[in-house]
Length: 213
Length: 213
DNA sequence: GCACTAGTAGTCAAGTTTGATTACCCTGAA
DNA sequence: TTCAGGGTAATCAAACTTGACTACTAGTGC
Image (cartoon, each protein chain N blue to C red):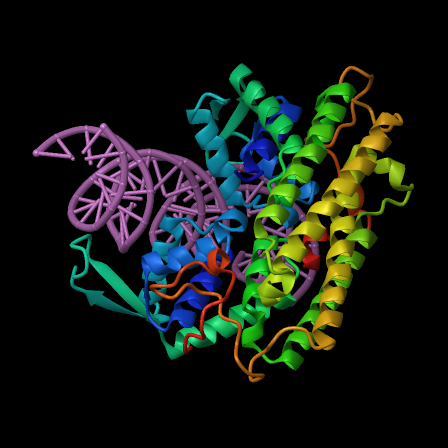
C-alpha cells in the first residue's frame, strides 16, 4: 500500500469538501510530491476509486467559475472516515520499510488522542525489534558472517535502518509524552491546508520546494 | 523506478541463460520478495517487457522436461548489459529514499571495479548532503521551528534518515577502501545464484563451485 | 490405487502509477 | 491586437504491480 489514499482522505477531510485540484495543491504544499507518489494522475485516480468504493461522495459541479473542464467536489463519508482512521493507525504502527507511509501518518497523527498515538508508536518500536530479530536470526550463517561476502552489506544496511527507525521513534514518543503538539480533543487543532484564498506562507520571495530535486 | 529491472537483469546475467522460474527462485533466495516488489507477476512482466525492448533475448523452448506450460529462456543482450550497468551505477549514486533500490545495487556492486564503486558511493554521500541542505534551508520557517507544529516531525524524520544513510555509506566506503570483498577483475567472483541442480549452500554449509559467468 | 501435498512454470484481470497532454482563461508585453 | 506564459482543472494511454489462479507432475501415506 502506498500513502496516497491516506493523503487524499486526509486532505478532503480537512477541507470538508474539495475538488481534485485543491487536494493536489494541499499535497504539494505539504511537499508530498517529493516524498510520495502524489502525482496528478494518482490523486485523481484515488479520488475516483474511493468514490466508487463509497469512501468519498462525489458532487458533480457545473463548469461555473472559469469555464474549464467539469469539476467534481468530494466529501468524505462515514465509511471514508473509518478507513482514514484505520489507515492512520496502521501506518503509525506497522514497520514496512516504506518511509512515505510513515511520513503521511505523522502528518495526521494529531487526529488521534495523545494516549492512543503513544500506544501505537510503542507498538511500532516492538514491531521493528521483532522484525530485526527475525532477520538477524534467519540470515546469520552458521560459519560466521564472512560467508555472506558483500551480500552481508545488505543485511547490515537493513538492520542499521531498522535500529535508526526504532531510535527515532523512541525520541518521538518522549517528545509526545512530554507534552509536545496539540492532539485530538486538546484545543485548537493545527491546520495544514491552504484555505481557498490563502497565500502560501512560504511563497514570500523564495523559490518552490519542488524545484530543488 | 523500482528495483525489479536491475534484479531481473542481474539474475539473468549471472545465469547466462535463465527462464522465469529460475529468476524467481534466485530473487527469493536473495530475500528480494521481502524487501522489493519481486513477485511472480512483476518478474514475468519485466522479462517480457525487456525482451520487447531488446534488453533480453527470448528463446521459446518446447515444453520438454515436464510437460508443464511452455517456457521461455532469456539471455541478456549487449544493450541489456549496458542498461544493467547504467542502472547499477545510478542506484548506487542517487539518493531517492527508496531502500529497495539501494539494496539491489549493493547486491551487484561487485560487478564494477573497486575504484568506481568508491567514486559512486562518495558521490552518493555528496548527493545526500546536498538533499539535506536543500530541505533544511527551504523548510525552516523564519519564526523558528515551533511554527511548524507536529509537521516539523516529518522534517526531523527525513533529515535523521538522510544523516543515517550518509553515515552508513561512509562506513561502507571505509570497508571497501580497506580491501573488503572481491570486485570486478580481482579474482573469483562471489556467486549468488542457485545453479540448476544446486542445493542451497546454507543447508550444506559450503558455497557451491564457481559457475561460469 | 487413491487422495493429498509439494514443487514447477507461468497467466490473468483488476488496480495503480507515470508522464505527457488537453483545454480553458487571464495577464502583461510587443 | 495578439500572443506567449502561467495558472486552473483534469484526462489518457502505457506501463507496472498485485494477488489469485491454472495446469501439470512427482512423491507420500494409507
